[in-house]
Image 1 (cartoon, rainbow, N blue to C red):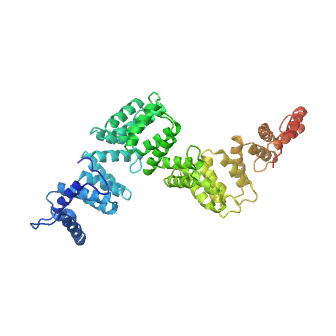
Image 2 (cartoon, rainbow, N blue to C red):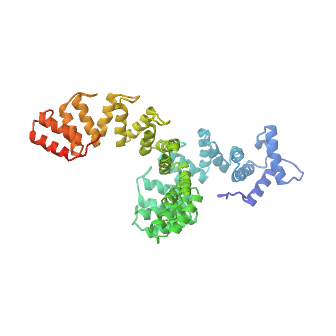
Length: 485
């Protein structure tokens, strides 16, 4: 039994086999219906705290399969805890399918047991277990990341023509993980998996043609592959097909078809489709405007950790004075995923003096995180926090440190202010030469105060050679500039 179809009604034949196998678990000459026997088996084991395998089955193999199928039945009916109990019982009887499902059940709480179960199943040649074990090595979420081990297990399953394994090999060759990057080989793997009907591989081929990755770019061919995968209900393909109907890449532009395919992807809970259609509904440019539903869809995407959706929600709620706490929540969610923009936005909300969200210490944490990632706006804001004499965190040396970063990254106000600190020796050793240099940098960018300061230094010969002509030049230049506060 390689594949078992799941559904709320489940397979009648599969359940019939399951119940009949379960009915064999007790030795009795009395005719008993399969359904009653299943209930009796569960009840007896629970009341007597007796392992189910001790009920003397006709064979462990048959009983292991029976327990697995019972687990599948409960899983299909969303009774996960009960399903996992049956899968574990199946695994104890060395059912490779039971071991596979039991490993998935226990992985969140007991990775050691999960890995042990999965390896037992994989080593017996069960392709689904080989693929899952490979993915655990590939992603590094359960096991320490090891691309070589991932490749090994994918190759084991691929030898059995297991399409997901073949597709995964394609992705590893495309990305150059555990092997040299080889786009031609990646395409070969995708094509092999696609011939076996694998929708993800069809979508991947579409992406390669859409972007010209290892092949000559051909958006028409890309659209054909997206359609194949979309007809199988592949979420990413549904979203990709919607996008090309919206833009007319490889297909005639058709907003109605774009909406249709976005809606199909949304039924699959695809967060990218939720976000994209949400934005389109809010903008109302290519499709009828519906801001209420747009925000609803973006909220669904945000709940699935779509960073841009979280940023949009943060900005949306920021418009309303009584919704700033909601705005901060979404900015922080995006910030936790590494968005520098969100870090700065969250900090700005927490730096509003009259706000109930005011929290300089936490704001500085977010600003420093953004600064360490290279966000230039964070440098200036950090300097302002530390240099303000009204700040709870006033620290002139740290303020000048961040001011220097902002100045070095071309912020003209920071350049002018850093020049003043050097001129006065405020928080840094006095140095008129460096003061003049920073005034000059700010003056070039049109900062009037810096131009006046530079003119004064040329006039007096402080930090620069005495030069009345240059002094006059900068005085005249300053008279043409608007002043700043």
